[in-house]
Length: 113
Image 1 (cartoon, rainbow, N blue to C red):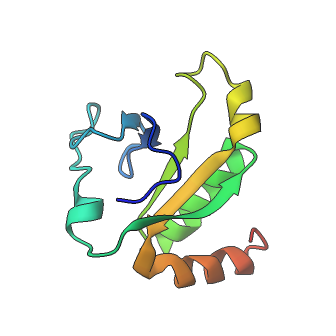
Image 2: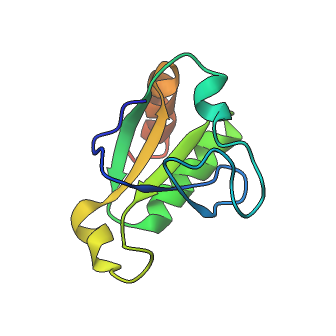
């Protein structure tokens, strides 16, 4: 799995939106199989876009989810203790590599790309 940063990062569960760690295979809140995103698809996970705030990232994720594109939101604000880190590092939206072109088209239609 490719990511920009190999440090321990947190992601959001695609089912319940809970914060999960990269190494988690099952969501500790809802029990969703987090490995399905990688296991069921053959492509690597790639960066789609970096957002300046969580709201825009969540809005884009909702549109991609509606289109059937599996995606993850990644950000580091030290568990809510340093929300300003999201402003400097941004909120990353990740998709499977083979969904990248379709995801870009959806964001362009939303005027978010």
